[in-house]
Length: 357
Image 1 (tube, rainbow, N blue to C red):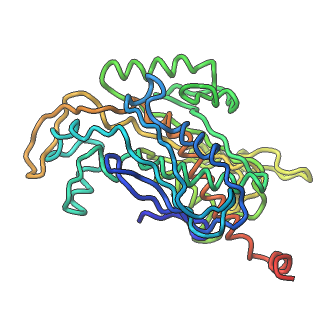
Image 2 (tube, rainbow, N blue to C red):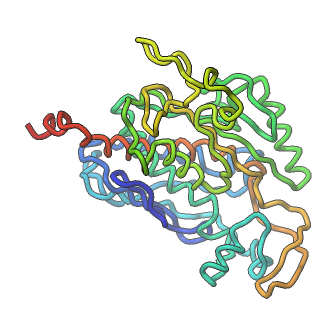
Image 3 (cartoon, one colour):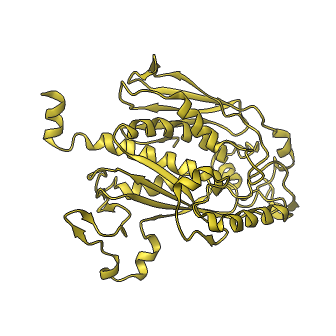
């Protein structure tokens, strides 16, 4: 499937080395002011080649809005956005057109579809996430009018964990580090792996504030379940935690429960979600990204004839894909929350009466 969401729906298209990629966002209410500079700034956060910690591929990632707006406002019709590829080098992949790269989707895509688009991973490339960021920016603009804001940053790189979270600092960090005290150590780990033609993984912390009580559709469209689906749908994400996540399994109920006071919850082990529904507290999600599978070391694999071979990869790749995964996680959370706010509108008669009376 290439679409996500029920009321606020995004469909993405395009490939890493194709002519362009983009998205169609449907379900956006009419009358939302479209800040094109903000949308572009979100794409600028994700675009490649900003530092030596990222791929050397240079892309402007200039986004164009083709439909769904008029005189700066949404019209209620589908919004189509496109980003043209400008710096693809498909020849870098000529040596792998008949082989499967370990850790990539080459093997599964070929066996599922019977066609081998070897140009930088084609549809399975992380470059596809540029389209999600564009759609997520529209969602953020809508959520901002409701007082909901989303922030993120790297809380772990190569096992080096942040001891404190400073989201304002993360905005100015080249690797979106949340803890300035361990940023240098995290950066060194990435560069060390790069020098060895290897890669490292990382963990992105994403937090939404100002989320109202009641978002989430039990039992089969729970807020935490859809957030997990959204994050796991990001290329290279291999695990998602809500609130305390896996730590919860080692705690007692007396430790894991969040006491309730007249002023709200005294802690937030639940990550802002109870029974699949937002409880008014901050939504807290950790997304675990595997090491970039594109490494420049000799590896063993098979070709399309299932014969064993050795090969060395060419091209331009991120030594830590989690860095640029930060803004993508924000986009996916924004898309989920935008969808959930629209789904929640008709759950009480008083809501309908306010609209139609």
